Image 1 (spheres, helix red, strand yellow):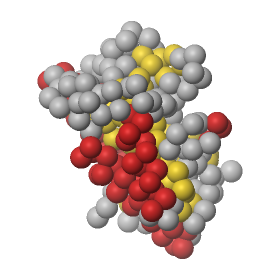
Image 2 (cartoon, rainbow, N blue to C red; image 1 turned 30 degrees about the vertical axis):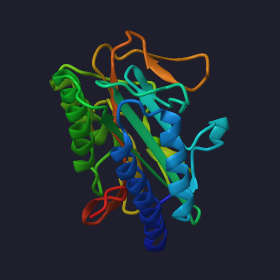
Image 3 (tube, rainbow, N blue to C red; image 1 turned 90 degrees about the vertical axis):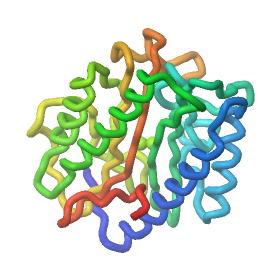
Length: 250
Ligand code: MG
Ligand code: MG
């Protein structure tokens, strides 16, 4: 069942996502060598609650923190830790979820820590671009896999690889709703996009091979080859005028 949202619901989702964007903006200024991912999590939780929201991830299936913080070879779902200290040249993916008046917002960005290599800069740039390539396909009448295929084509043109094990998703009253939105696939498949659907589109892109595994903490996903991975995500509504990126302030 794919839930479509009306105007009032979309306005609430916009509010939730604008809090998410504000948190990511704020964290972007704090990311630097010597900072722990736990410190960033604490700042994020305080800002979310001060804004009238709730951290969607905290307690979700037992997740112990307010944001996911994934460093270097960590792909997604990294647990913020006091002893995870950022170093010059690292990359840090931060994923933020906020519930506001019963609706969720969800967005992620990958930040450079100090100066990063040209190769990692390219990985971040291409991953972000691929998200926008996917978003361009968000309009009434296209199919979910048109989004997927656009992301995959962009990423693979640069020789990077797409993670298969984790996918984007519908979002609304629940953090994860139907449909699933893979970041790979053949165009013209899957549900047709209709007005009022909201998709969290979130390419996860690896520098090396596509393989990932989950660590013994049962959360942190890492690349099997130990190479770096990047993640960008926006929550996007389907409107008659095309995509409305709820998690991007206009
Ligand atoms: Mg997310
Ligand atoms: Mg998501």
